[in-house]
Image (cartoon, rainbow over all chains, first blue to last red; front, top):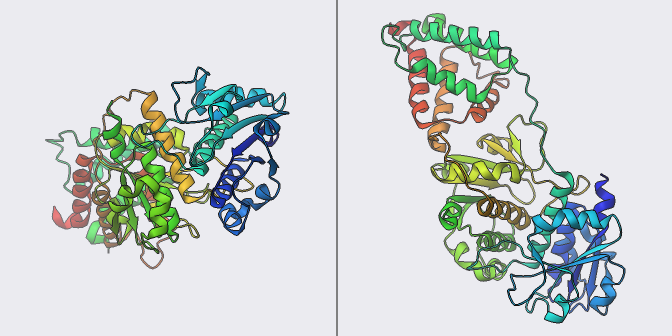
Length: 243
Length: 243
């Protein structure tokens, strides 16, 4: 899937935001995850120097932001709108976590713009505004202090969208595994050296080699590491006599 | 599972933070997801009025933050440390997304504190600092602008931990992790012994210690294994002379 096209169809709508720093933080939170469409409904502050400072390298998202007088205007062309809010048990709307909602938000975005709406820092969204959205989004939070900063809430939502889109699993780091026989002969040599340097008593080996095998099994062994460990064993065998 | 206890075992470590507002944003990002343990390593700014304003209702997390002179001090009692960083292809450590790492971070946290380390706003983390952590964490981001704000990065990580905790029942791992300080002093002793036995040339160390650190990072180190490796190093040091 084309990440850029899908995410450009997700609109972030901020209603009556009052702190310029939050405008900047939201722009940055969007851009780092690949979102670009920002709409401000009846903003209570200007896009000023503080906003641009907090936006950092995402000032372009701020500059392109559209300003609307009403939520209806901001949502007019959207095909799905979800309101991000603290848990509201008094509203009968369907409520989802970002993780639950992200796949359908993105699937729907193929057919037209979808919006996620965030209320003002102090008052959130009114019931009337909430009812204009099809879904509620509840970000999981500490029940004793669930007050996410506006920029943080947008960050979590945008992150969730990006992860869902990428279904991100990082490739395992390059690992050039040593073949079984090389690992086995290394462990045999290790055992011999541990006997030679007096650490392993062949008459009373206890569980030393099984423990070392467990350690090596957890790490896995690369081809180049075989040479390193053989070098260490050889140096240990020679010991002080070799210096 | 007791959410509060598990999340209180996850430490957020900020290295050389320079903006007070970010200290506050991090405290708030932590508390809204239920994290409380904040450690500042060599901070380049004070916990001032701006920090407290941005912390909002999480000023208590700021007030309880501990200040350490070094990363080693901050990690000393931890049993697992992960460094949050942009994708670094030049480092061979295991790298995961927060979503991949969260289950094991939480499972390991049952055995002792686990840390997630964040570098300074301008310079990130040095190679030396990264190598003290077992894992790298890469937050998925827009490749054209991946510059997450510090507070946003902590928010994403904390959110991921909370979602993971609420969603899953974690099996107890059969792994009794050694604390960071024990692992660090073991690796320092290993380096000394490798010099003594003539395998490591201090004038031309090449990449031997980073490679060994990588090997140990992959394996993880259990408490009992510290004693085994110390015994092996001691025997190697004594070498043939000890027989």
